Amino acid sequence: MALTPELTRRAVLLAAGGLLAGCSRQPEADRFHLRLATGPAGAVYRRIGGSIAEHLAEQVPGVTVSTVPSGASTDNIRMLRAGEVHLGLTSLDALIRTDGSAPAELSAVCRLYDSHLHLVVMAGSAIEEFGDLAGKRVSLGARDSGTEFTSLRMLELGKTDIDGRYLSQASSAAALRDGEIDAMFSLTGVPTPAITELALAHAIRLIPLDTQAGALFTAFPGPYAPAMIPATAYAGVLATRTVAVPNVLLARNDLPDDLVYAITDTIFTHTGTITSAGHDDTETVPEAWHINVRTGISTASVPLHPGAAAWFRGHKR
Image 1 (cartoon, rainbow, N blue to C red):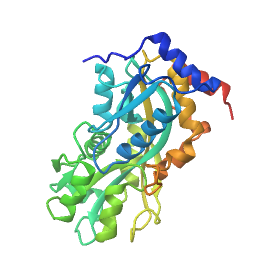
Image 2 (image 1 turned 30 degrees about the horizontal axis):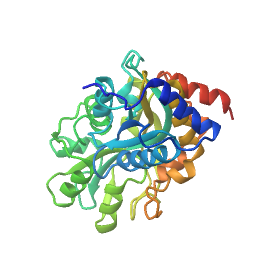
Image 3 (image 1 turned 60 degrees about the vertical axis):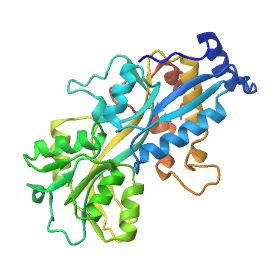
């Protein structure tokens, strides 16, 4: 179902432009309601998306924002293309087709941070390497998530058959703890809440994925990079080699240029406070520290929205 803005295009342009001119907030009746697709429970997408939404509502005059929980990347792309949301988070590999193109009706606001693929087992597990997953009960993340997309690619390249389960990050961690699954994949920021909480209560291990990462680089050049999950990320867990995938904030192309300019300005002007998920600063979003102008423009073959491109042209570093 297509979304209908609560005010005219002209009013939106004036409202968004008001941020740049230092104008005061628009009256309550003159508001444009944005919907931002985030992710499932226990995921960084849910946390960082909520923080971005909060700051946009505070900083962009004439705009209110609500977050829409989802399965994550693939689900967010679907909702954006269907017109159910205006903005959404996605991993770059789930967005870029094999020919290097992206959906024509979508463009990037910016690159945010990189997700790392985690393969988590309990400390006493007999699984020591990727090949040991064969025949095991393994969570592939929520359906339509970036975790599902990337882990299935990796399993297909490795010709490894598993007993796949589709669970959110929080549900995966609980199922792993309770012995209902043998391992869980999670493509997410480091650290991620669900794995952090599991590691604090129970001994876990991460399985190295460097060989599998190399296969991804070769088969799908562009969206993947070698990475390391540091030993400081999770209690009692050693540093582990894996693969990283950039995350981008997407917008529908029909969002007004001036509004997307104001959204981009808010993200990069308030990066320091986006790291706090709430006004009381009791919860932090460490992934937001990786948001910066230098990498923000790096969205591979996905074009920037004209409003975002205009902002980056005026803020070269």
